[in-house]
Length: 235
Image (tube, rainbow, N blue to C red; front, side, top):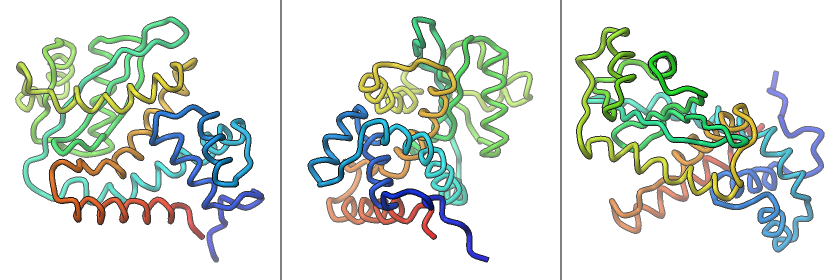
């Protein structure tokens, strides 16, 4: 029995829906910016339709991307994680977005809390380990909550910290910060958690680090990412 298409009952084609979602998630655009860009391409949809599509299909696309990439995330060798947290305001209240990235810049996990202590760090690290398995080395800043949480888990010997050692995590926050400014911040923890997770999966797929290899390889990888995106949730 064939799997039922998630696009059934929608008048717009899957290609248009994927395009709208990718524009909103990948680039620092507002919903109305996406509406205007689609209108230039002859596609007449409102920004509220784009919002609905993003909420409906964004997590679905991200989950499929994650499933496809999970097998190749650790292909062997030394696997290093970088853990860090960023401050995010929700309705004027300070919250914390904990993020884990590996040594290649792949975002592994995003987790939102309203505290920045040992309990929150422990929950975040447990969730990351459960989903992605064992890390050979865990690089953090010098916040004591990380060390306390890792000692509780019995893996304190894998921790590394020091000046500039965690630049990989610090730099990985920049794409999310650009999106946060375009969205004029968030209003709920749930919406922040949802967007951060989807944005991380999509950014992993399209982040080619073009300065590290030739133009021809960059173009080939970009084309492969687009082909993979256009095939998401296909019948």
